[in-house]
Length: 147
Image (tube, rainbow, N blue to C red; front, side):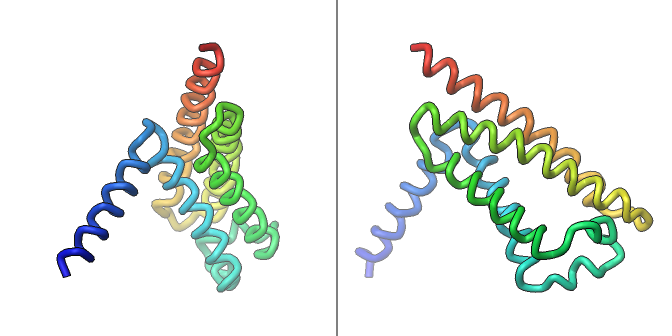
């Protein structure tokens, strides 16, 4: 039985090492999971957009939102798993685009006010962080390319 625990422990260590190998990867993975969660929720139960808190999303249909969030999650995933310099640029630019998308999500919640929700505070912060982390990824990639 200890052999199984050793294998699990080494897999956990390898995953942990990969996740924290760069300064930005944890945030990039978090951003991917948020997009994927939105896509899944929009595909599985589009009735969520009938809720008052999501009234600002009524302009776009749930299938459009699901497709958009799925596309963003795939683009984020490509940026995360690529190790080449040009691909890291893709990761950085996907974070820039993510910043814009999260700003739109934030606007969707603000339009639905009242009631005040935590989303009105969370998504503007996420938008700003995506912009800053994207800038960092692109700057690091450019520095790496110059070497």
